[in-house]
Length: 180
Image (cartoon, rainbow, N blue to C red; front, side):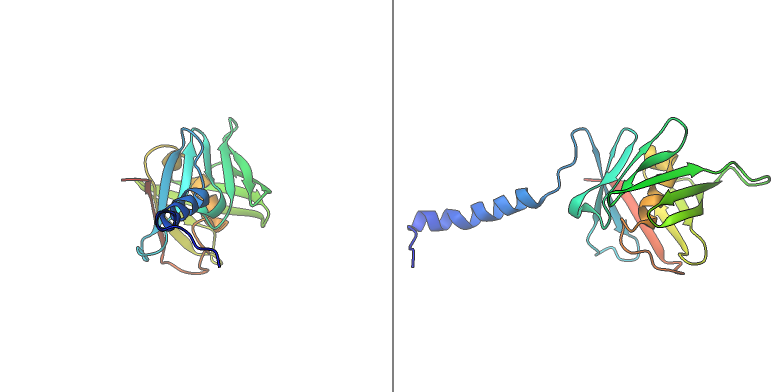
């Protein structure tokens, strides 16, 4: 059996704990705005950490239940990847008589092609992927995520906030800047 001197033994545990803490964190890229997602109906749940950096919306590693990176393009589409698979979400031209607060998008990704709607009311976004996935309410902060809620909807659909609950009306999340 190897014996450590008293001082080394006392320093070993705190240094080991600090090393694990620093080593297990997923670093946000420089200049990124860190966001936290909390389920409104389960406030004690482990939060999900997301990043926003200019036109990028992302989460990597242990920060979310899905590894994704989306970038807003000049043509109005958001393109990127989820879990290494290509992903594209583009607006569908407006339907006659459809209010400005409701927008329709086409999602092409690893789970196939889907159409979904996003309804915006102030800081709240309502995402509807149809009867199979139900509807989610997401409170979004000012900036990119409020201007382009389709990026948030795409992350939610692919499980970045946890597994979507089919048919549930109680899927609600709060996205806020980290430290607020």
